[in-house]
Length: 558
Ligand code: ATP
Ligand code: MG
Figure 1 (tube, rainbow, N blue to C red):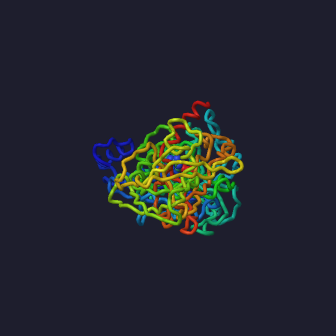
Figure 2: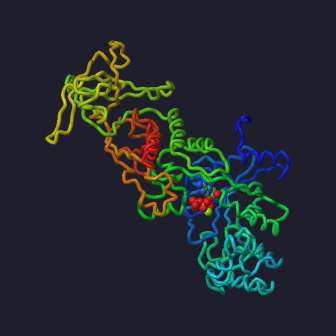
Figure 3: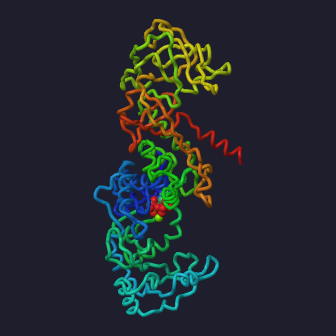
């Protein structure tokens, strides 16, 4: 970040802390995902922020798996999260940790709290604990077990871990204040019995720490200086501080909350994403219609564009719903510059050049990028039979239609001007072929004729074209904020995926990068399904913002 750019409030706090010598001027952050699903675009905000502020201040960032919920978590998710963070461009070096790495220390910390008289084993049922907790307007009631003797608490807690009790028989709770206006301070649970093996620690533990207890202490154990999290943790901060005051008073990481990123027409909840995956609504966590990092990677979003987007939306405490167009503009800007141009016809219509010699092939020279001559040119085969885009022909065209119409002329990009002489239809009256003639004096770049026509269209040679599956994605939901709907399944867009049988210029067989299909959009070979023998391309984004139109439509509909 350059000096002149205004800082967000978190970066400002960190600068001030460095200036005042707090934490000896160190910056240590962490990104703490729970491995219970794949990461989504919201996590990208947290990743860019945590790794970003550390990088900017020569600090360090931990990737810490918050794995305190065995049963819901898995190694598959751990591996996916690591891949996603790396793909986004960040490196935790040797700072890969797990809350479970600290289970011994957390257990000892719990024992210390018991010894201090600040934690007790409660034997109320889960329902009773809920009832005793009170409400926002009524204070809670103290559990009859709250006054258990320290020795009895120690004995019960050890036996909870030894496996002598069943799930739910006892919990360990902090002894804070059952009348606190902050519900989180009403003797929160520290440990519960869960007799299931853990993906990291196997069968060693019969009890597992709660997130709030594990989180702040893990921060302290790692020497985190700034613990950046989303706003829903604001009410947990007094508890975060309470644990540290009791147990690690000499190191005080500072928790700072910021607002979550919500993206219009996308889901940013692992639980809801999981429902789509489990329900078979999408092909997997990496379905290109999902705003998961794996989905966006497969879709072809450049990680730099995603980082740029996160930078543009900034970091505040305001709730927000960011329009998809903002993300797509970052993508278009990135690819507009980076992606080479290619020719592809998505919905092909056959064109026969009746005055072109049969069996002959020519090579046209095409620029790879209109603004970057250093990217060079390539050869495009040209012949008597071509494909053009169905939309580029109109039989009853309005006067201002400058593409192909009966009797009209158009330029084939990098080739010749052609005229449409005949329209061939099938029995159903559908146009299946155009008979055209080309003007040999109008070859692009030859200078033999400077005749001009208003329209230029793209094409591929029928004989040489690759037949490809092209996947055209649209928004997955029909409502801008699917996460707020009771049943997301009722708001699925039935047209979120169109599969087109496209024709591509032959050079695309071996393509590995994102490219622009001229006049159509940005596309990339599908990482799983594409091969030279059976090309499969994903549409990354259209050339223009089609979302603006959708947003307007949604507004006028409502
Ligand atoms: P989910 O509801 O998707 O499960 P979560 O908050 O439970 O999200 P975690 O794995 O606990 O997911 O999140 C890891 C970190 O990412 C947390 O610090 C969390 O605050 C942050 N985070 C999660 N969602 C968002 C979001 N939409 N915007 C910004 N940060 C987020
Ligand atoms: Mg969580």
